[in-house]
Each structure stands twice: as C-alpha cells, then as structure tokens.
Image (cartoon, rainbow, N blue to C red):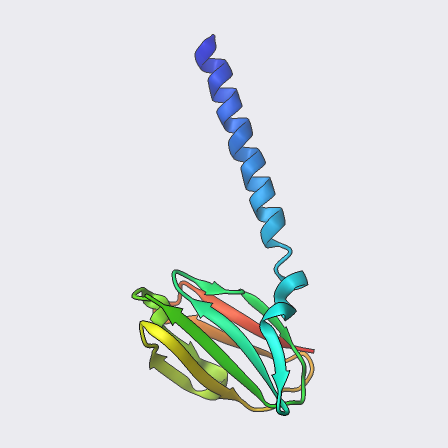
Length: 128
C-alpha cells in the first residue's frame, strides 16, 4: 500500500514539474526582445551558445542591418559548430569569446535560423 502511495506522489510531482517547465518555456517570445539592442543604426541580437542556444527565439526589427553576437564561454559541445544558412555562414566558434555575424536587412516575417553542427540545437531570429 505504501509503495502505491509513493508511486502516485512521485508521478504527480513529475507531471506537475513538466507542466511548470513547459509553461515557463512557452514564454520565451515574451522576453525574447531583451537580447536585442540597436546601436549606431544596427541592431545587435545576442545569442549564448553552450549546451544549447539561448534564447531559442529572438524578435528583431525588420528592414535594418543586424549583427548576431554569439557568445561562448567554455563551449566544447556541438553548439560551437554553428551554421546560419541564410547568410552562408558556417564555422567553429571559439570556446570562449564573441563572434559577430552580419545579417543584411530582412523583410517583415523573415526568419533567420542558426543550427549546430549535429542539427540537434537551433535558434531563430524573427523579423517583424
């Protein structure tokens, strides 16, 4: 009997944790603009690469030049092998540092995607 009660409690905790985690991750777009700044006529979209890319979705302004600033810090996983097909970019990022990738002005509704060398992790910049 006690094993059944413990199993039900553990299952409830796992389901509750999954619901809390998934509802928190669906709010990515609400805070996505926090990593976008405009300076000297260019917008800078900051992405962190280590174990995954963060944020996964960024919202940027359309029709202005953009720079992806990809930050690494002790990154030795597949996110260091970055491809951005929209601008024919493909390179190994330094394990620690910042890499700047120029993105020409994009039309409203455009999406620029970055993807790791193994195709497991990605990020998107949506231009509105």
